[in-house]
Image (cartoon, rainbow, N blue to C red; front, side, top):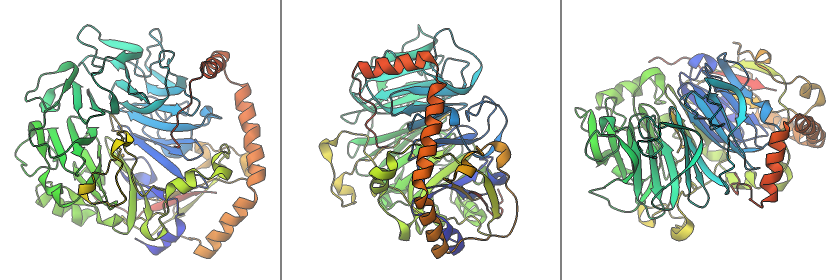
Length: 564
């Protein structure tokens, strides 16, 4: 990784972009929000949404249905703040193919983007083409805090902390699991799931559930054998998946565009469904469809703790925070350079290690339809993200308004570096009955979460941009808009580590001023909120429902946009 790029990235890490992300002319790049670490990322077919530690949401990419949430349908070429969500703090995000869902700490679900099948869950009478601004999902029937959300092409799924599953949107292929009689639902409906569910994952037209005791349930469109039931028939209700060679309890699931994956406590990975682009990572390249769970044998040499599926490509994160990828190579979304891509293709599309992150800690990955986002940090700068997220002084403060932007051309290519704000272990989707030790060997059966967001809606985990949050009143008045940010070419002028430290110290000195300004912004936003929502908030609190407990082919030279 280029040392200049490394010095520019904070210890809280950066998001690295690959493929057709719309960012930095689709060149491999990276960005970060200064003083507000990115803690979650999700990808749709063409768009990306990130959530910051202070609860702010930024989006960019394809926006034909308003899925970025900025009130228009123009393509967004750089991370832009979804300000209409203020002062709510967002803690969960999921991207469907052309829609977005978020969950706030106050217990509300919002959706925006495509709503042609009611996938935003607004109401039975509000099924429309799209919503350009965040709109409140009807969650009156949900009386518990939310643990996870996931989204497919035209359906959405929500998991509560007490293990209940709610579904809404299209049921054309049985992806809601409500049987043949219901074709769609415009509001969340409780799914009669057979067991306590601890994880959910949506593919384009199918859905996966993981139960407390490690059972995998699946339903929806059966094309290409992606249900793993031995055929191609669709199933409109949850049905258990059989594993012939199960070595230990299933610990995580991930649904891709037209395929499915799961991994066990010992790190064994299972794959089934469509394999026409090698997205299953199996050695049998001639097998384009596999209708039963099959072990990805090449990954037995590493210990996989997280699997993330896109439309036609897959990412694997190991216990050493290394990244392996397989599947469609179009637009460089496998994070490989040209030479590595050629070697990968010659090796029959087997999982390949992404060497550009060899000196990094890979925290999270989101795979979309045409792009990939990697949240990572430089290994030598790695610190426990929980220490940052739990810091009482800053974590409790509201969003600081992002001001203007200056652009810098970066000389680094596909190798990008980052600094981290990530945990040393992934959170587990299963209850703490089998809490592992710190030893990362397979025998310790460590549990990890697989949420992240699939392109078309999943969930389940090159060109550079630095987003820097300022705190001055002068900048605060210049609220960031698309017009304020232009990606321009000029020579890199990266700050030295010493000057970076000075800059951060100066920003810390102005925290009090920025916080008071942020409070004024919040009060303004709060005064503009609709009465129905306020009533619902009061009702939510009056009922004693607690908020969510989560702390929440060719490659060009990369470029970096710095938000000052």
